Amino acid sequence: MNPLELLKTFLKVPELSTVGSPEERAAFIALRIDGRTVRDVGETLGISKSHVTNLADLFQTKLAKKMMEMRRKSVATWSAECRTLYEELSDLMLFDDGDWLGGHKVGNFDTNRASQEDWAEMRGRSLRFDDE
Image (tube, rainbow, N blue to C red; front, top):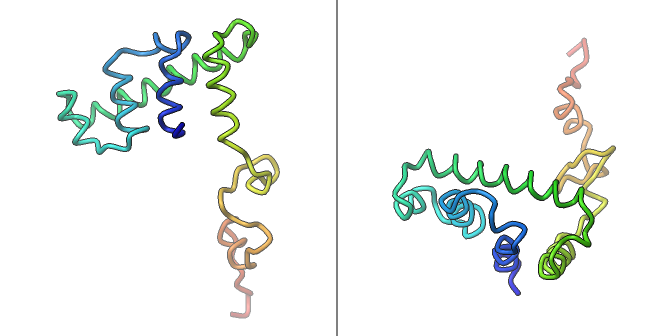
């Protein structure tokens, strides 16, 4: 199954189906998962463009809170469908340890290939000498 379709299906499991309002859920899915434009989502839902991102952000916050609550509880309390989809999504999101440096995510940046100038720029220091 396509990862985006898998995520949409995961949002429909009983544990997550009650998160947020239908309008928040629709804005989140259309904007963040389907990749539609803010204007298109606003026109479809009949709301202003600024309200679209607010609804999507609100749903994302509620979803994160619910997921944290679920993870605090035993996985045994989750439905079989929820456990299966969660495992499938987790398998798709493999983390490369090379993306982490000292506990901080550095993205696609390879710390071993940075020049002194790059490091100085990142740290906000100048490489200029007093005699220059």
